[in-house]
Image 1: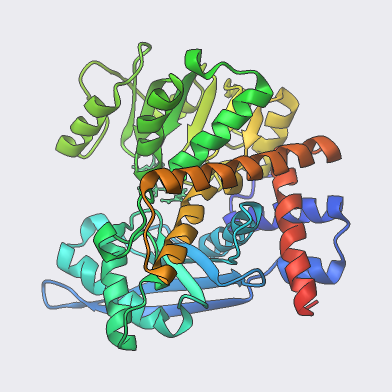
Image 2: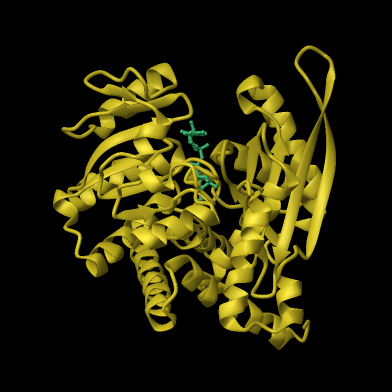
Length: 416
Ligand code: NAD
């Protein structure tokens, strides 16, 4: 049988497995398998050459039983409605596992932002917000950045929303620039949350992080901050990093500033001085203590799972591992910090951003990180303890924690 790489089919299969262990009521299971609401838009945008191009956009509100829906917006040429559905389901489990009072959503536009001018990107971002405006809001659904979207895009979307509504409502969108009500610490938050998870995992696995090695796939917002943080925080040596164009390796460790400077100059990490090239495939299979997938889905599959040598996989990307690869990792005793736990630092600080916007009173970065550490440490141990108690792997355990919390809210509301 060929491996099913449809992210939504994978998200549903993961839920099904947890439902079995939880002996979830079948009606509740059926409800939680599907998004509650989804919106599909055709978005016409005037291009610089005077033509009009129509883009396809989506917003999926998977479940808002625990609070307003929350989730990023991704701009990607390979975006599909099933990717958005899967990501919105994972957001639902993520906010629940991090125990923040929000539901799960996700949005996306099928587009290649690298082929758009700044003006076209701004018009597309504003047009997307005009389409979703009536369905989002501080107490409804709050978007944020994801792959290929950034604080500037959030700023344009915020501005469009506030023009339409006629008032200021900074908490409608997170990941904003600081000058428009962003939170200190939001940039590194996803990677920082991952660091707290890695620290706790290392304790239970008896890994000495100060002599450990790591490889990171993906050098965007999440992957680059993971590189920037892990060495100063723990002394861990990063021997390889990559982006979509390929990777670089150095047995002595890669200096973050050198790689970041090279990327800023050339747009790629490859050919960074003092490094050897390595393919994305070989990077994943390196003999390292910690493997950090921080790029896109379906990177660890039945094809390469047998060759993975890391002791710990910290999934900062969403959906990097297929269920077939999970089975292999379980057999090999590789410890996984599952995606919606490992990368929940981003949404947790987004939630802090909403709280600060609500109060119009802002915290400094130390306060943000202290509160993030508290949330992540609690979430990690809730999942780890569940895995031990039920004798299941950490991904199933994360689902058990998250699904029980969402199901309780659904039940209390009397929906099922
Ligand atoms: P980004 O667009 O800033 O960076 C993505 C990086 O991955 C880039 O370096 C890109 O070149 C690289 N990449 C893309 N395709 C690749 C491939 N096939 N092989 C190797 N590298 C590839 O995105 P990001 O915000 O850093 O997000 C990365 C992952 O983390 C995604 O799965 C995203 O859903 C997840 N995530 C992001 C956040 C956040 O706060 N930004 C929060 C939670 C989860």
